[in-house]
Length: 323
Image 1 (tube, rainbow, N blue to C red):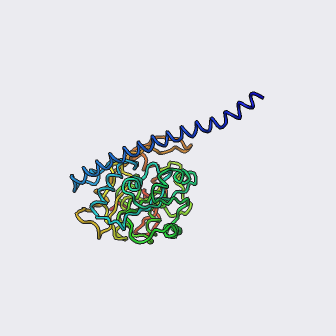
Image 2: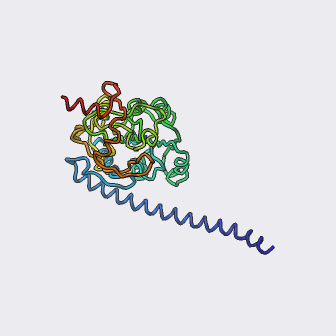
Image 3: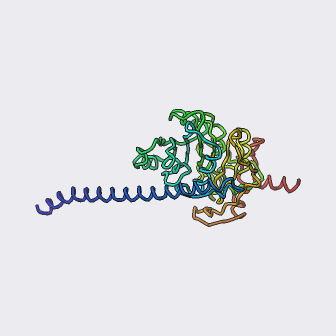
């Protein structure tokens, strides 16, 4: 009887303790976010005094982005003169949104935004955070393909001129950006595959069910090359500004908004990434680097986006060597 009574009392007490701990953790997280945002503001002001930059990478700093994208975007936003009416973004492939290209814009600059990820767990996590009611953010759970992306964005209330489009889905990135026309972003950020090299305009073949970890055991076969994205950007009226230092994100600006920004070329902007997230045939990390990564996928079929022909890196290398 006493044990049962103790359990009945302990239940509510434990729940109250958990609630107190949860509020304390949330408060500490908010304080940390506030400090990070203040630091980001200071760095953005420093960059404003230092601009223009010879290299886009000189503007890098990290608040909530994975690497230095926060600084680059603050710089590009300032240089392109994005207006109040354009302060909205669409970003997809965000996972739980803890590291993203647009979170600093949401929390510091109070932009309106839409994020999309295929994981319900991730999107539910975002909806459960304070930032979801503090800011104008729409989180959508969906598997993205080139046939549903425009309806998805439009149905969420985004259309016409927006500030930023960020594409990061580790697969059909080229084919999805190619199809997007419901929004007209000033700035576009796309993740690119450095392993494909600087010379060829190639992408993985389009597959609406593409999954990086299943496409090839190495985990290296995904996305598109820097030259492919440069070609697509030109077709859509954008100029290449450059890559971040680590070689995973490219930045493009609409040509009518360049101002004093100076475009570059795929060859000049190319950065060989140093990620070592390759796998062996058993699915275990084997930490390949440099050209050893390229050899893993040299015979996997890719699409030349200019001709539409299916080829391989080996075939392209042979043709280049033969002049």
